[in-house]
Length: 316
Image (cartoon, rainbow, N blue to C red; front, side, top):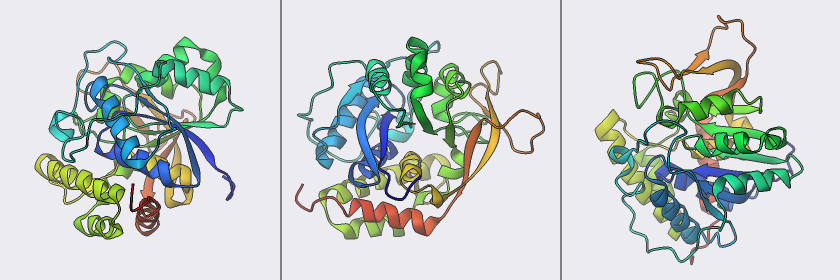
């Protein structure tokens, strides 16, 4: 990516504490242009995740960024949510007023299709949620597939957090994930191997607190709630900002170390449904199809996160 390039992105999300931070990172960094936000059922029901996305846009002053509501159910399976991690609202902790910003008139799938077809092939999709909307868009209008510059997604890994084998976003709609992973679109995967290393410790949270604007204060509230649930459920000492890693990659890929590997999606296994089967050693002999993020530069990552949140006005 050229140093002066501004990368056009659509964030497909299910806010979600880390989804909110991903939106905020995109909203104030000059290296990306957030042209839209689409929502899907995941961390909570789609009505709730959509309201949360509108609330995040309001506190960030993102008045002109459309928010389109998407799929309420996975392609074939029963819906699952993550209330144990994100609370019943999907974004428990911070107290925000009801949004005045309204939802876009068109469905998220139609928004994605329209934007891609009208583009010069320069839009990156950032799905940080179950991949239902993306798969549905590909199935409804296959002509979008060659128009997608890249898909940078949060999901998967070599271990699971929803089952021993499967990460939540992939598990919730593995059939959709299979469509996306087999689409041939350039794909970069931020799985748990990477995102668990992007933990906002109490020391990092203190750096956010020192910024002292309404957005950074909101981020601290998000991180404090998220850290508490991750401590209770997984024994973590910090809050992993999973989804923000995908936006950070679009801003500065040099923060991350990635490897091209072959990844298959398991949709039939009794114990392994939703697993991203990552061929770390090349034992299958299959061509690599995914750019898998494995390491990050902690100092560069957090400096960029803190610096971007400092861009927000102290009077929003």
